[in-house]
Length: 543
Image (tube, rainbow, N blue to C red; front, side, top):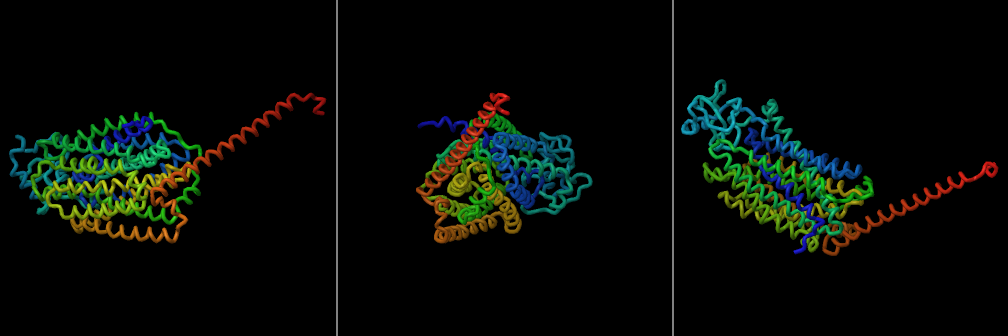
């Protein structure tokens, strides 16, 4: 096996960057609910964050291309992620105005966990006993006088499914704790999308014409993500043993260590920046093609599906696990294993094969397979009753996300005009991540109205229907707009032709710039020679 030493630093970046976000990022919806935010409000938050993505990504990409400051923007995104994810640990819990009497009864039945002063043991000393009601159904916080509830707090009605009582959205906005939490979530998301834009741009620049090898670089991010998520889940369960609330301190430590290492790696990456500066007209011409518009719409749909998955899958897994066994002892470990399956049994092999698959069947067919994979996967989620069955079901993550994401970045790289790689990647990424915002909005509404199972069933059926619409529209456009066939990159030969076209364009730009520079140098030499000749002319000659 031959190791490409040129791309080794990029592989290391992907590993440490995703190992730094894997311990926390996939658990953020669960952490938000534990802080006292209901599932519906979690959906609203994860709607707002991705909807800001188009502005954040395109601005960052344009700044990097126009100012040719790719490394500075890259490092800035990592710093923002590091600071915000670290700050989440010290975010205060959101107080609840009342106590659930079912929870109080269950606490009274657990007197063995009380200390001699009558309060629950915990690593933390909470400033307000009314902050108790935030977290998973089997989690609470330190509380005194549990038999009667805290002074001044009223008893809330019991719930047959959960002991947790959440504030409404209108009530949440009056608490500063909510805004601190939202600010950290917003900042980490801004850093996240900026880093994604710049890392894909730099990776394709380093690969040159070997675009099909992108998946072999990106899979190391999956390895880092999966390892850190599994280790983090196990450490959080271990560290929180004996506590009524999960303590994510080990996950925060892993995040700081790996992201600090990534700052060093990115600072030493060796990549060149094209001399050609971005022109908006060239970007517009590249994007306003029928097939490209269809792909952008498809990315919004895929992003919407991913938004539902990323925001609500862990909430569904937790709900199914607690319905299966109210005292399910391996909750966070199960979530870590789910990520492990998605990474090692799904993403790694498909990222490795993605380039070959795309070259063989084309981008359009690859997107079709991805849509079908999402449809089957979400429909399976809707019928699972034993939580351990989520593990084999998530092998389909490779067919769905494992193909679509390399296809997204590869297509954006192939059609990008010279000097506008970061901007084009940002626009395609904005379509995808903007879709995840819609997924948070749609998923939150469906989760609230229909419940977790039916919500995933609905989105799965929609993905299947859109797959049929997509392939029918694609075939129609091929017949109506044959001139755009190469830009569609629809087969192995067309893929390679698209790569060659892009290389020729870049060579022509470089050649033109070289000719312009030679012409400018020649003019400058002639001007200097003229000045020198004039300086040697005698006064009589000049008169």
